View 1 (cartoon, helix red, strand yellow):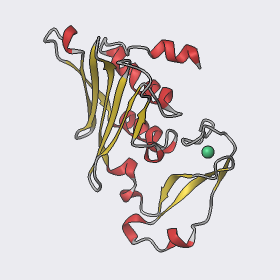
View 2 (cartoon, helix red, strand yellow; view 1 turned 120 degrees about the vertical axis):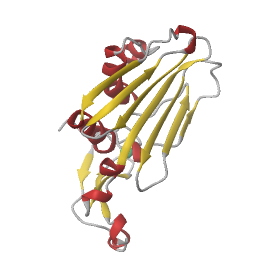
View 3 (cartoon, helix red, strand yellow; view 1 turned 180 degrees about the vertical axis):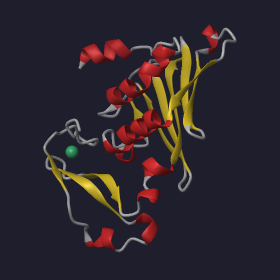
View 4 (cartoon, helix red, strand yellow; view 1 turned 135 degrees about the vertical axis):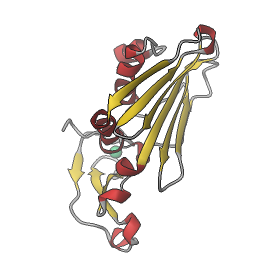
Amino acid sequence: MSTIICPKCGSSAIKERKKQTPKERNQDNKNRMRHAYKCETCKGLFGRVYEYKEYSPEYQCYQLEFTVGGFRDGYKTIQIEQADGYANITVYPPVIRYDGIQYTAHIPLSDWEDIKDDLFNQLFVLSWKKNYMNHDVMDGTQWEVILTFDNRKPLKISGSNDYPILYNQLLDLVNPYFDLLGVEIAGYHTRLNKR
Ligand SMILES: [Zn+2]
């Protein structure tokens, strides 16, 4: 497992938690979980270990959709949807580039499970803010993540010229599939070089 980074402040001073708080102990069966980590810097709790694995977000999530782009160059979307024994990947290129070719691929279910494990247990998307907004930049880059679950409302996170601490790690997850299907992410390498 790679280094755990706090999704709220970026600190790597993280303590693993073993015990439930009284509040966590009082949850009903379905939701019974404890936060896996505590950040020593911002004191935030994040990561979720479910007593019943089948209620965990990584078990219940069946679709990831990620859109990124800008007004000038258009938006591209990747959609990974769980199917029976595999996952289906569809890439929608920016409309201005759209040439009518269907960009789809199948990946093994284990690859999709790895992606979900990263989303919930490395990137901690459940602890991200719902919106990241920089009002000082006109146009620029907009992005959105939508996760769909069997047992809970969809999780929507979006941003405009502002990004969560672990945004690049999210791009690292989806970029190979954009690459595979021949669609680049605007600004991806620029942002990597800046960090
Ligand atoms: Zn923190």
